[in-house]
Length: 120
Figure 1: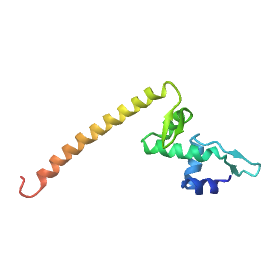
Figure 2: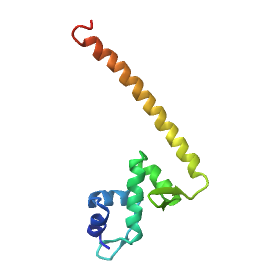
Figure 3: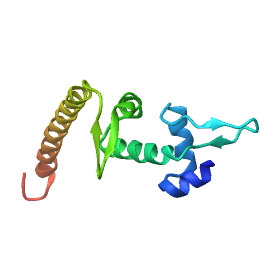
Figure 4: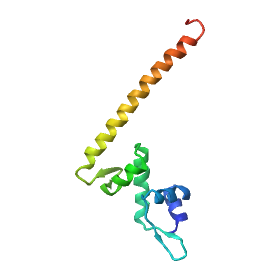
């Protein structure tokens, strides 16, 4: 299938599909004319990419994770032994970043509250 059909079937615009290719997440065949040809399996690959992006993973991380996940009904399931450990490490980094943002928000709230009329 061509890029337009993949875009229609996945709801992902063509520019993003080309970006995923540039990042090594999709590997369409190229015709001598330069047109990209995608396989039926690429529909599922794009859906997995979108799920992993929604989970907060970068495209660099997704490139490493993608070969190690499969569709398991409505969710993705790991297939490589070390993937769960790597994802737990990623989750810990996210948790730390969230905690830092919550601290920053709290400090900002203190400044905002001090600037409100009747609080000073």
